[in-house]
Length: 137
Image (cartoon, rainbow, N blue to C red):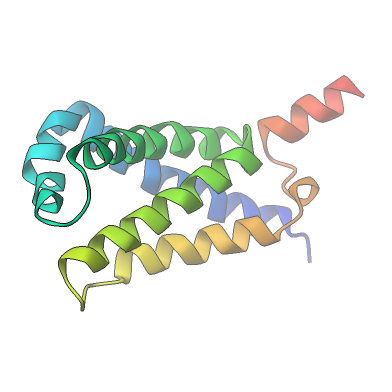
């Protein structure tokens, strides 16, 4: 079976999920509001405030930018790794505030990301990376 179609679907779906989440954090609510209404609660943990603030901005912009990169199919390998880091940070953070927390959003995004990371990049032929590589040759 041609792996390019399910890969395209998974990449677009994951890209839209992250893009819209990042868009909401950056443009709809504003990252400072995201910090004040969500991340600020982590100040009660052992984490320094500077790390929490950095994490708020890093995860918000990484979701926005990498989501767009996945939709475009550009710098896919780098975007996959950055989003993997985001998911580890999110999982760690949720675990700090509650020992039993809802995995539904992390699990779904992780499953799509793992699928994409396991598919060789050249099998994803409907991407700007592939187009640019073909054009260069």
